[in-house]
Image (cartoon, rainbow, N blue to C red):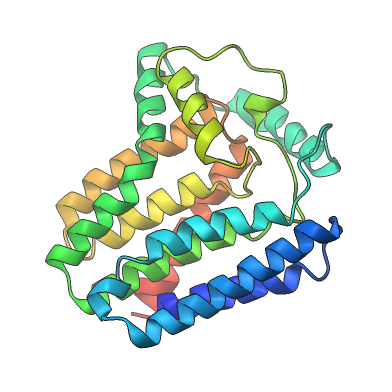
Length: 259
């Protein structure tokens, strides 16, 4: 079993354990428990039975499942939670000290934020084609660890994205497209830290081990994702900053501590 598969099994099993302690209706608790334990079991079986080249593409599904399972353990708030109020307080202190994003650049960062969805598959395709089995293992270990470190807090640190709190202007252009996409592919809860930022930066950083030039290109897009996450109010500024930290720590552990 590759390290990224072991990580996925542990994460899914942990989410199953979380279903026993979070305060949610029993139907959601049972659904989350069954889904999490099924995901852990299926991942373990596929790691044993499938060809390595097939297994290397499956973490796309592990990442998606890792994003959605914690949402089953969370009640969508209809009013600000204590954690959301705290985040709003950090926003009031951090946002004024950041430079503003000019409108033309904001459109570009909005486009970059939208591109975070194909960024991971594109980065992985390059690693799969040009790298070794070890490169693939390190890539997915870094990406899954970065994503899971953001998603796992959701059942306990519940908040809504700032764009849903009623304090933002109506989005236009690419921003409107982003909101439309998020309405269909996201659970409308705020991940803390930002999963978009952490996963994008982790994928870009892991790609540099195979192709520094391509990794730099992906890194520029990932940096724009981080700017767009804050500028478009998809995440709180603190979410974005800690998403950068989560990616940096993950990459350091995977590529330096455990080369």
